[in-house]
Amino acid sequence: MNTKFLYPLIGCVLLAGCASGPAYRPAAQPDDYGYRDTLLTSDRYRVSFAGDYGTARETVENFALFRAADVALAHGASRFRINSRETSPVTSNSGGGPSTSIGYGWGYPFWGTGIGYSTGGYSRTRYETVLEIQIGPSVPESGPEVYDAVELKRNLSAEVAAGTG
Image (cartoon, rainbow, N blue to C red; front, top):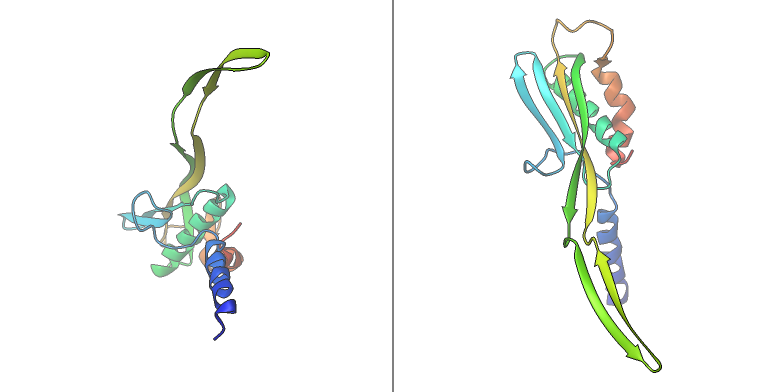
């Protein structure tokens, strides 16, 4: 094979992997992005989805709903009720702190001094949605915060497969 085309092809494949968006997957570590679910009682679960930096808040909320539908269906329930929901920003600061500098310079026929101040660093924000859901026979057929798990998955599956909102 001609290596003239091999290296650009490898580069394109690597770039395509980087542009794939947030993955709907279990979170590998506590501070990682992805979903988590915890059994609270026999019919209640805590379901969360943490997005990566740059993932839209709406996408994070939709992925959490999608995971809630997965949990309901995995336990034989066709619907679920959201008892509580919260979406929170998680902000990370990095880089140096504030700094000052003093300088001077000259050049014929001028000279001068100066003082500079920099706040340094930057911050990034990502979002996490936490839902407490209820499944089982005590969930009504319809009502506020009651979702049909099959319909919800059908409506959101294209967005989840694409990894964008």
